Image (cartoon, rainbow, N blue to C red; front, top):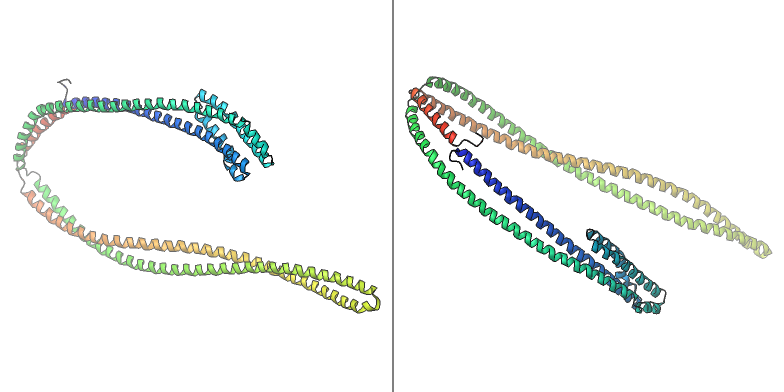
Length: 489
């Protein structure tokens, strides 16, 4: 650094150099960490590809195992892995294609694997369909032909090639991650050591320069301060004005004390009123709770009435069903009576009495049919009345529920009012206490101001020496300001 620079410029230059070093370290470390994160992401991506490829091969193996179990036993439960593979295999192929979209070699392998998977699933379906049709021998013969095995062998080769490729990429990315991590550690470690050494060196140099430049100025300031202290003991100009001001302050403080006492009395009355309001709010809260209980009881009764009316409607429907049976019986009886009358008329004298009985039975069946219609009409009226009552009761229940919600809101409002009133009471008491303390403090201030006024009357000395010493201190302060003048100056 230039020896003619001010102390402020030296500090600014040191700060700029330190900032540049820190920024450079931060930029390099950020780039290294960003590369490390990218390498970690690519490693995770490779693991995902390996996992999806293994899952695809496993799903196909499970499907093949389930197919063989079903063909051997005929038990449908063995087909669960096969059913799962039908859904899982296309999804896994799609995921692999998306994950390896930036790798043309892997995309070609997926293009080869996809028809193999489709052909294998078709072969499995064909053998399963043969077994379901009772042609198990044909299914076994088809399996023995080895077509499905060839599909699986080809698929294993493709998945193995994908696995080898991805594991090669995994090793390469692991090496890149390790190199990036080592580079980031070295940059941070050595960069921090260099910055620390620079800061220590600059600190030593600035300390030495500061001691040399400020030492002389401090000596002048100390001598001038001693002269100013001696001159300050003689200052008395303006003492009379200060006394008059202190007298006015004393009068004002006396008025403030009286006002504080009035405020304390008002705060006490406010606290008393707040306590009464809190008691009334608590009573109102209890009344609202009783109202809530009453509305809840009404709600329960309304629900009970609705249930009874619904039960009455169901019983009316049951009576209607019974009446249908009775009406059908009456109709059948009427038909039988007519047939009996016809048969009796053909029997001559012997069937005449039977014809009279059959005619009475027919009349009785007619009366039963008429009564059944009348009862049905009455039941329909009862059912309509029940429905109307249920609707009205439900409307009443909704109204009760709305009233209950309103009561809940009123109760919440009362509780909030109680809390606010309690808070107001506490605040009023605190105001009362604070006002009393303020009045006491104001009285003490009045006494202190009186003492200050008395002391002010005794402070008289020459001001010329004070002004001269102050001028010297102003010059020395300008010298000090130039020493620590910032770089921009």
